[in-house]
Length: 312
Length: 324
Image (tube, rainbow over all chains, first blue to last red; front, side, top):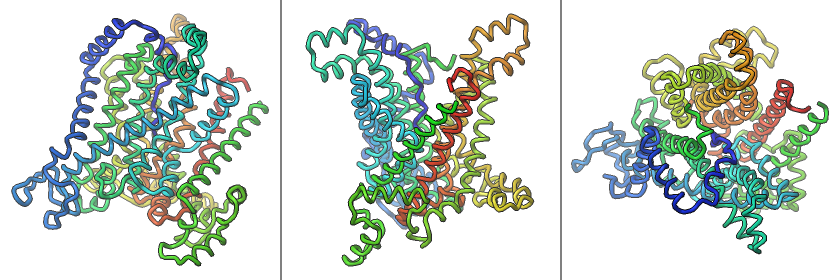
């Protein structure tokens, strides 16, 4: 699902190795300039900004309590006015809950799961990759074979299997989706560490008596952040899609937490009676959010390593 | 060649053992798995009896070994809701899923190759931009939502396609009834079009991009330049020189894609009430029918591993640079 990452070249990191601060400032400026000149990237950033804003201020923006049921106001069409002059801008669902308010709250879960799962998977993967690449030998073999085994599963099946047993829940879904991603990071970090560990500045750190921990996390890690950022961006998109699919199957967060996936799941029962708004809006929310992360991932990759540029 | 085969086979076996280990661990992670197999209001004695009957009172390694031994024989215990062997229930649903997965693979790969090549040959032109924009959006649409939208638009509004159901093709074929199978085929495809498009769009989009970049890379190679300088027609260059080499990464992807498609099928089948493994897993999840979920997952993983093994072998045959 989430494997649309490009394989970043080691050259990506070379650009940022050991450069003075003024260089970093220049890089930041270059990033900003590239961002405003690329229409796509700007659109992506704008969508992401809106989704993040909604995720944070959802409760203030929502006209209704997302869980308040109102049997009198069931399945209202978008734009219909409810009681007390409150308009159901995007209609209401089978329990009379406001689709718009649930959509706003749903942004929280999608972003939270997306970012938290990447944090979990990224941390595990980075540690595994650093250790694997730096030490090599049997540790490397064991870690990489474990990854191979995991990749032999279609990911969604693995997630289904664990969530069926563990039961749905926010923490469980973050853990399962996060652990599902570790190998992507581990492979890249390992490859980069293998090439970096022979570099002079790593040798120097070793000669100066730095601890292995310090060499791994203070010397090597900062120099491989560029490709990791690219992967993470694509990965958030993939994880949000997976979360939606799992919520759709009823394996996501508990029913009292509105999510886009579970809203779609509920819409299924009302397709035949053509209650299209229940399905259209949560789906669009997912598409735009995922699109934003994909666009930004593309832009980051082109920016950090123009050689990999795809759009000619 | 034989050492390569043996090594890949050995790797696949190790991976399969890993798969059984993971699914065994998954079963144990929720605490005493006995509770997954008994009803919520079972008495302490009933639970104890079930624990002994299911063998969950034995040491873990014994349980694992017997789990693997049984799994090797396709025995995952009885389905809790169907009251018959779980593997049998899964196998019944299998042909429909294979049909759908295969059809979406053909659709996705069949369209992505010409689209990707066309975009590469028109690099930088509006048509390239259009195809790549479509690909970018295609990669961002959840497959099940796409299914729902197609049901609403093409199924209920335009009434072009059926919104659910399935006409079997493989089942009569396996039974040796060729005439029924092939007379069913057109209707079988007709019923599969919407689910297959929903499942395949992501793969189509991703592969169109892959084919394009792979093609662009090949078109810059020296041998293509040489061919051009010899005055060979552009058409011939694309077909004979470039495509042969651009194929390779695509073939590797096909094996992996089958796995992603299987995953997608699991979700999309529930949208279209398509009677395959996906819908079976969905029902099993809701009824907490663990043996059926486990049997399905292991069977699908097994198919996935086998397919990747086959893809590697095809790849090795096609690319003489791969040492056999």
